[in-house]
Length: 233
Length: 233
Image 1 (cartoon, rainbow over the protein chains, first blue to last red):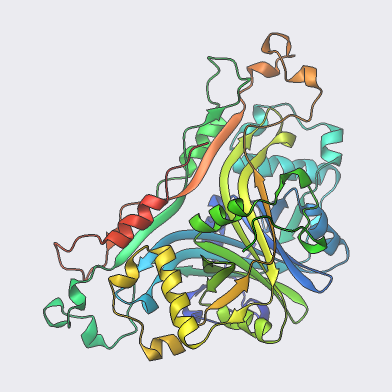
Image 2 (tube, rainbow over the protein chains, first blue to last red):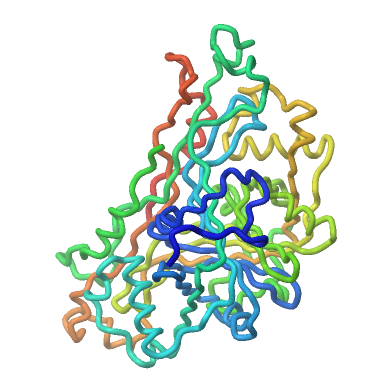
């Protein structure tokens, strides 16, 4: 695990390069709160992109999805995949449509994933479960041999990744006098600008119809909900 | 605009194919509430995937992002892109880690995007702005010629797309007698199962530091917040 991310040709941010972040802690924070990744592969020369559940695992990212088969094939053939993890933090509302933006924290990782087997797979599945539902592993029976055999978990090292972050209020690309002093603004100072914060949040847990009355919501589900805090700037 | 989506080889859902949806209304509803898409391209033989702002536009999807340049090049060269739009609706908490899942509505579109110019671009930008911030176009001055020239908007037809949806409580892959009557369940009936609903929600709007006191939050920002409703099952 490195503290500073290296920037190479394929992970160099091309537009708004000042938003590229090389701080390892920023990457870790994105993965700590992300539940889902979008994974792109090349299939028959054509790009394909699909969502996967994800979890951090030391210097790697774990991926698990019902659609793992196609991506796994790419991995087996030594073909690279690209993974995007994006947290949408807000709509940035400027005084011109051109300057509207989004606040976000995003990660892209490139590499060839490893399909885990045996004990590595069992451990990784527990880690995925505990990332999505902290403590759930101790609330349910361990996975059976048959269940493990029917599951695919991919591990992608974080060696080649780029992190891009935008935060804060809107900026203006117009002449300074157009957006400065509200007393001398050509009317723009009277136009609201700011940020509408966004976040993935959890609602009230909904028990399955077959859960008998009186069984409380388990600690794991409460922990998952608490982690998904309401949006703030 | 067709009412039923056709399924061809590249848009056929391969895993959990019963979750494939061919209802055009399901697609429209996903795009109506989605703010962001993940776009994959092949660059030098390697997949790349990046987030873009998105908006529906009749029988097409509009894409706008700071990183449009690379994707645009792929489009200009006639190379296809793949676009995923995913709404994560809940964590599905089963009585075994194996049966855990996610509720989601997801869309994948394949095709070669068109880079819009002139009046088409101006109209598309207004549509993007009004999708993200309903009514904002009437609250700010129109984009200048220079701003339009510095902007890239891509339009991708929805001809080739697949929609996949999972809803509802967890299912069990175990033997029926393991999950039925809680009086005769081998202990599993005492384990909570259900769904933790998730949704992207908006917080309180945060004005820019240069907004004079007393300027109210505009209708567009309030409309954007209201559309992002709290999660329910």
